[in-house]
Image 1: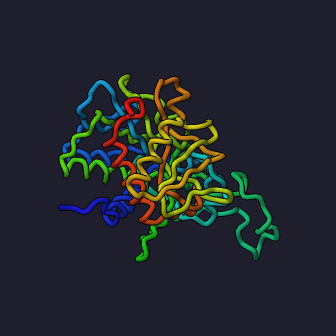
Image 2: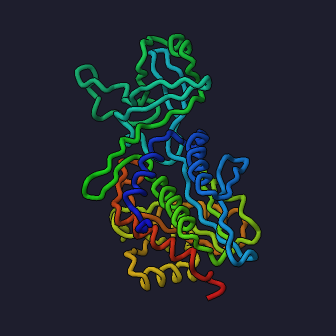
Image 3: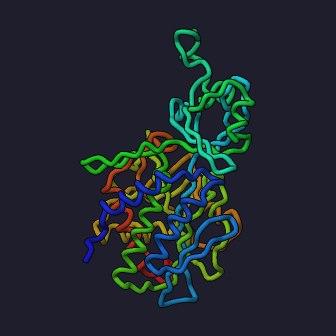
Length: 352
């Protein structure tokens, strides 16, 4: 018999997830991992045409459905230009700054299936050569990939099979510390995917019948804005995005509680659902924080913009240094998983 939530196990799943390259547009491998995880639990799954995965757990009420979503796609890049100096120019996938990947190890994924490693650097990196090494702008004109191959010009690069449009993923550098922290790139949003997988595992292993048929969408295009705006069954009344809680000056969110978002750049989330989530947290002694994310949009807000008539919400573990050198703590994972468990076992807002 397991003790739930098993945060050690959850961290292990997250560690596996972040180690699988999956920039938006290049997610088949990580979706396959999630698919195999769920099929081993005898969970019904299907892929949508966009490449995302939908898992369904039947409930007592099949006329009203819930949908939860977390995204497995990450920030990344594509080869923009094969340069004559034997290096690559990048075009970014997702909303982040070049300075957050300076010096990062990366992998170039070619169309012929070969992978090459490299390092993302300023062209003017050497302080012994470039007077402006420190002041030069970190942008796509100055940043480039140094490939770990003997290449001196564009023809040498192309002879390896590297071409414009090849995906570039970043080394996650994942570490799990002895005092409960997990730090890695791509905790946005693979921490939440790991939490949902563990939640589904708990429901299956404890043979819990949910009050409503519940779908779990593992979306693969959230970082570019449209992962969760389709494939929502018409019976769905509540749609909850599980994504990172944003931390910084003026924010309530921390690395130790579950963050309940009341508003982001898309506008307020459903007031009734927010109050329901807070009520569940308070009744079950779950640590939580309410917060506004000023420069943020979720798959739930994408679904609303697409015209779906649903009640929408957003929660997630608090993630420090989002879209850069991310970190969270196991207590935030636990609180998030706890709240989700009580949520999927509760009445809907319209039924309260």
